[in-house]
Length: 181
Ligand code: NI
Image (cartoon, rainbow, N blue to C red):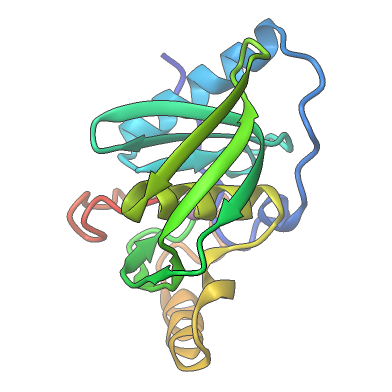
């Protein structure tokens, strides 16, 4: 079990686009395990490699009791949108109404290099979009409407963790209804 420190907003790694995985080796399998362990311990519904400081296109998710991962994802999004609150493990304690596509078809690879297609709706679709955004250096605050983003930026400035490289506070799993991503 290897739980890694989760990088917080302000860390440049979260704004750096991640590189595609080329080697499906033991190191990659260790990365997937570290992401799973860190995500489940947080607890969160998803975690992307840049959030533990690794610039590779890998994320894990844990939604509706299903634990999974995806490497080098590419997404097809539905035109239909969903509403709902969303949080992020890199923004402890904050969650906001964040528009997302209702359904997603995600193509990618398993950690063993096998091609895989996953389909999801609602929370799973939200998690897949959120984590894939992380791989492009995009954060959920970028997806908020103008007014909500203003509120979010104010809350971030006032947050106890702002400026800390590593979280100093333990976030209640209830504060974002388990929607940390
Ligand atoms: Ni996140």
